[in-house]
Length: 370
Image (tube, rainbow, N blue to C red):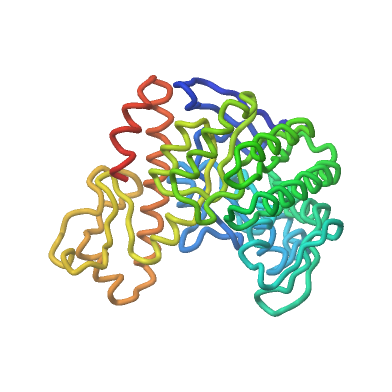
């Protein structure tokens, strides 16, 4: 049987906010969508069965980390990433550009060879070119593949950002050629250009000329303020192709997501709900809760009375406080699952309000609360 081709359709709009559907041969992805992060072929502290029960339609994994451990060949021998981690959801893989930036003490950039770096695990030398990044992602059998880009740190140096953007565009062309003809998969371009409007628009227009299945906004969540991030989105929102999905990489807080949806973003990923879950921070419809605070030692109410999924409300704040303060593994498991579930409840509410034409009111009610 032929595999279903990748497709995207906008179902409803409320100004720039969009409600849509991405179709893949592994299943549909409702947008706006939040992708739980499974960097090492696992969403930390969660089973994939529970991730699915939260309403997650897609997860994200990472090329850089998987090429180092356990290696693409080992994953291929297991039948690909989906078989390896027992996941039948669509998977998007990041190309490794962000890790090249975040582990910059261990690498150097070469225009032709790509990133040359030493593993942060054992010091082994690696070469990650655009072609190699695509080869690895196709070897993992990713459903949505990201181009290789350079993700610079935040800076006001215009010339440095322009040089980085030009390099990313060169690598985008090479990534597209290496990807070849894979209609049942998708290849996303990544818009760079820092905080400079002209560079962002130039990057986007050049990527559109190359032609991709979706367009990601990279180079954010690297130290800029929320206002600066929203300013970048405002600069390019009218230029993003309406018939393609828009993906804001590495973002973010519920407030970030609400503001970005308002500016036309369809897809998000962030480690915040899982990382926060492991450190005792819970996201709820009434705001954030640090469950390790002593005041919860006598609070027998549920974490979030508005949560009705997965029986999470049967665990009291008192009990969760006890688990964290005794370093029990169950604490991280329960709070991580709660946070991912909250994020998916947020996305479902966003989609509902867009389709009903009430997103602005929903945004204004929660943007400062969450």
